[in-house]
Length: 437
Image 1 (tube, helix red, strand yellow):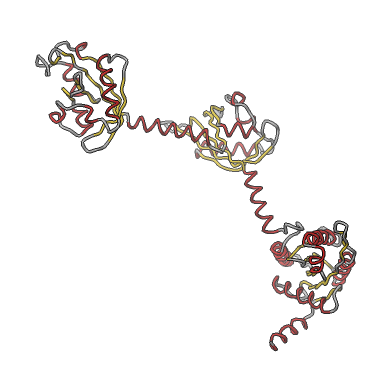
Image 2 (cartoon, rainbow, N blue to C red; image 1 turned 180 degrees about the vertical axis):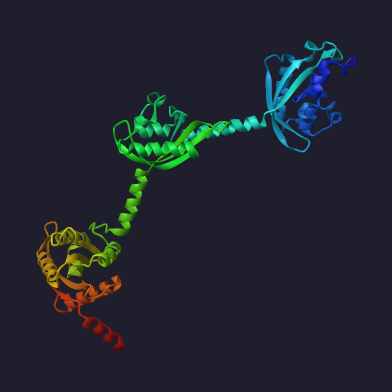
């Protein structure tokens, strides 16, 4: 490789002991020399490398590109670098940075056939490349996230925000950078709340909870805030990353789900589920503070004829009007519910005597006995009402429901447009009929 013995030359020692991979290449890319570091990189002995083309170690599709660029690098190495994938004998691949210098500029005596050689430094950039990819990925996530993200320094001064943040808050980027997050304060949160937040963040390095913020347009909204401290090598907090999730929509969605499960969509009255829930609450409250209440089941008489003669839309209008009339017959503390079809219920809370329930039932009968004006068409229905009293007739929800239902059917049997109180004999009559069946 050389005209003279270079084993004692400082360059020779540096070449072989360097922590960076070094190769000596000729003008066509044949390996004329390799140090120990490069040998380890490709899992080869030095004598296995000498005389082979470096292109053999370049991975797959990169090979042709490498050869073309190598020729240019050899002709004029100054200021030129190559990056490519090198494959070891064990088929593992690493991302390499290649930087060359003509040896005749360092050691004019190191030549082959009067041709100068190229000293090539090979640096494994795999981890660096992975770090770049992670940074690119993090930047992509930062910018494309649908959640608002804010980064501050250790003093809370805003360094960066993503697009979702500016969109949510209504600020331009230039209006936010360099500001303190207190510009978003809504005024709803007490000072001590923020003090506890910062104490936890400094001591633990993490905080999450609900917070109210204010947009640029003045609108206040609720968010779920997560703050994580970023620490340096000495464990000191140098940055804080805050992620804001608008829980207003989530809360509205939760409320919508609750509404659909507990309210009737046509009349907007509580449904059977909510009626059962409130009945249970009334029974529990009675244990703390004894109160009498009444449960009324109401079934519209002749409603089927309205649907058949005037149509389903007219029937729906009649049910909506029925709900409004029932509201007008009871107190605000009472519950009016639609159970199913043309069946309604009323929970009369805190009555003194059974006559209070009778008066309410009579008022309901009178209200429902009036004609219904349904888009230039008139309809007439009446109602059959069954009444059961707590605690006189029972202590269980199911029992009270059964009692009211039995009394309602007795009212129908009595000719409709009337009400009946539950009596134990009604249960006995049902049991007797079942025995006969």
